[in-house]
Image 1 (cartoon, helix red, strand yellow):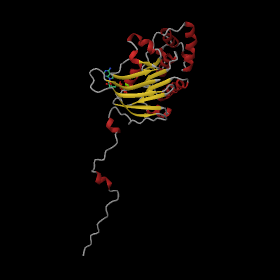
Image 2: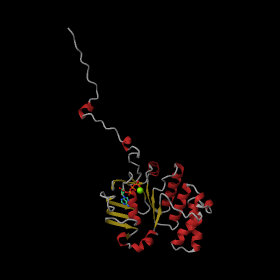
Image 3: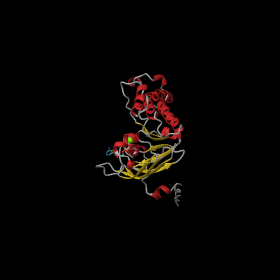
Image 4: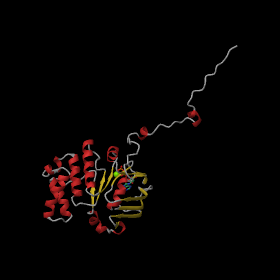
Length: 265
Ligand SMILES: Nc1ncnc2c1ncn2[C@@H]1O[C@H](COP(=O)(O)OP(=O)(O)OP(=O)(O)O)[C@@H](O)[C@H]1O
Ligand SMILES: [Mg+2]
């Protein structure tokens, strides 16, 4: 479904590559977490798939399409095959939940009849049928995120890409969103999610790809867990294991030296 072959991305003016010889194969219907420290290259990897950015070298094939051959003017058409969920989903403020989803389908060229049939179905899927006529300003963060997901999956894309979809959400809402993504995956959509949230990664136990400085340093194919050090932006060193600086021979003596018995005559 998705193939990256030796993909390297160096942004202009950057000395270090954001992606460094990344090769990855994702099967249809997989659920894949992409994790890594800030700046590891997670968003860049997703941008390669949405063609927001082009690789400096390497090959990318998505759903049988070689992205080298997708011309600039065909990018919007190509993107319609993907569902994309962002961290801060921008909804149209003057349109209701229903209209926000309907508008996305209208742009995609769906007929009115089809739109009227599809929108209630997806709103039901994301649990927002009763909020269909609310405006974005009257929704919670989790509800806004769910409208974003509804909009992305309404066209039934084969692939759903979500860049930190649960950032800024409380733990309960985070779990709801993740359960929703899992349900969408169960219906047959390949789902790629980047996250810093170790809890959701360990909860779902799906495939986990870990990036570090643009390289894949681990690919747990099933029952993956979050293996990074806990991040502490204020003081990363705090979380590093303490290093014993004594010379090696000094650390080896586990049994205390025998006390010398000094005899006095
Ligand atoms: N448009 C850009 N121009 C130049 N450098 C960029 C650009 N976008 C990202 N980078 C650099 O590429 C590297 C990877 O960035 P990327 O956004 O992919 O990281 P990330 O893993 O998504 O991080 P985060 O967890 O903070 O979202 C970083 O060093 C970043 O500074
Ligand atoms: Mg990112």
